[in-house]
Image 1 (tube, helix red, strand yellow):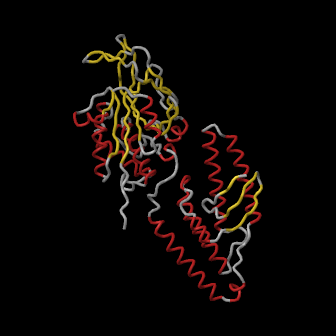
Image 2 (image 1 turned 180 degrees about the vertical axis):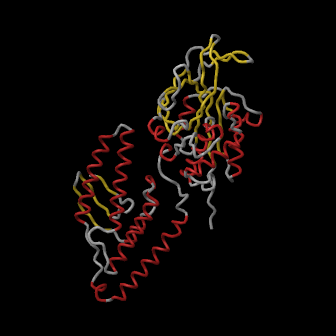
Image 3 (image 1 turned 30 degrees about the horizontal axis):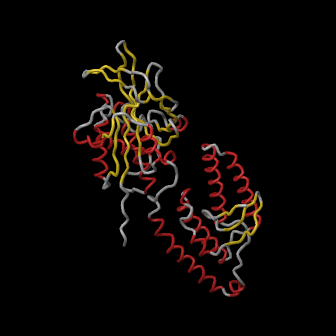
Length: 408
């Protein structure tokens, strides 16, 4: 037997045991409104506002003799939100290997919904409401005024409120070759600004950083990618975007939006300018550092894989590709690969890293480089030709300082 707490529109307390519910009692309106913000894990903050609005409207309609009967507006919001939670729980449970436990919970919750609807009691407004029409009107005015006082200020800031969800759920899946974007060279070399834009939009959604990006829609992201490409010096004629220029451009962009970087780090064999030497903290990306960055909710991680082709003298690097990293476990990472269209990105996300334990010689003008100790990447999330070896050349991680709310 487990305690069920009211969620968005969930304005009843009850005990759930299998498909049975005991002690189903309505809560007073003041307590319903007191639940605002509790269910933030699944984005329930906004859900509570909607639910409270419907509950007050439902009461108002009752008092005016226009009640909706057994199944009111607040009840509808409650049921819809509850079903949504079950869908989220089912998806997350399957991902975590806990499907059976989730199924059992779903059965209990389904039973709760059935019993809730069956035992719903219409509120008793009392004989005084039947005998005194003026009291009806006064109560309606008070309810409406309370609604405006409690909800309207919150709704003003709802657009950029913190959104609940994982990195994968809040990070876009923009296709760098979207024909509507009209990027130079059809966006073939825009993987770096696209991947970074994914991360910036994620931060904006997850932490309510309203001035960080133009917006979170598709057209907004096109503008963001264009801005970043200019800051990064993305140039198809030289093969894309240099990581040193990403470090410089990211600092410029963030500062221009009124924010400050809390963390900016890179591990790569690739050179950086003197201004960015402080941010290059290593040559070889290591697993523990990458896992920690990906697991940190406030941190964006992007991978750069180099395409290496075998030659008579060793291996030669011919281009590379940037991807946004949104999750991971062990040596498997979940990525949003911008070269793939959104529907494909949603399906093909896995990249498995395996350390190169043997010599991997890459001839260079300054001599030979041995990539032994670096990671090779393979998986559905990183498609490449059979003749290509994908080596993790660079990893950039960054986070922003959250703005401090000023007290009125």
